[in-house]
Image 1: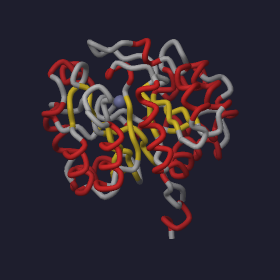
Image 2 (image 1 turned 180 degrees about the horizontal axis):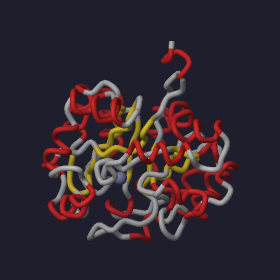
Image 3 (image 1 turned 120 degrees about the vertical axis):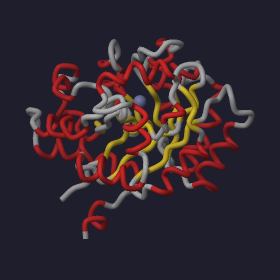
Image 4 (image 1 turned 30 degrees about the horizontal axis):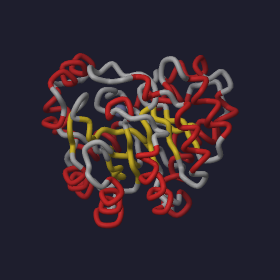
Length: 282
Ligand SMILES: [Zn+2]
């Protein structure tokens, strides 16, 4: 048995989402958004939904500091939630424009609170990944040995600035921080699939994550999927994508090798997150 990991779960409670986002996701949810989100983000609800119904072993649980576009679920609120749900792996959110000392906040999140990674959302937070002002954050993440995840590609949320989602700017970060593990969320969704695929193949520590992409279309977006199988990571984008189980089943049916499927569904994420699959399964 190998682990199945969802690398992209928004751990924002209902209050933390702006009304227009709730309105946008409501049509695909099985029940009203407040019940679905707050009912699932409890110890019992999470175990039932993510583990029993969806078949996941772990979820990367994301904080959110995007006051212009999406909402705010603070790092402190996120860690409190993750402490109650033992298979949630917390990733901090730091908006470099909103925090006086981003490096100190990252240290606090990782060393004091126990976060295991950092998520940055350049199109929502208004900066290019290769701006020198954020380099100190990467240096600290590299020193702490935690992965940094970037939103790349499109977003439909009002206030997003898509130019900041071009994966090409991540090339500089990968060159300047060769030991930093970088995860490109959404794999350059929309107009940058080629760039994301190339970067993941080119840089040893750069990964693609496929949250929000229809899994049956992966071979269309990335014709040589198998070639980067070591660098592709499954993610759902819950709650706006609530059918996690169906997406896992679709990946299991893709025309690629069994080992490639397992790498995508869990092995690559487990390696990045330092989860020892051998030991976990005993
Ligand atoms: Zn997301």
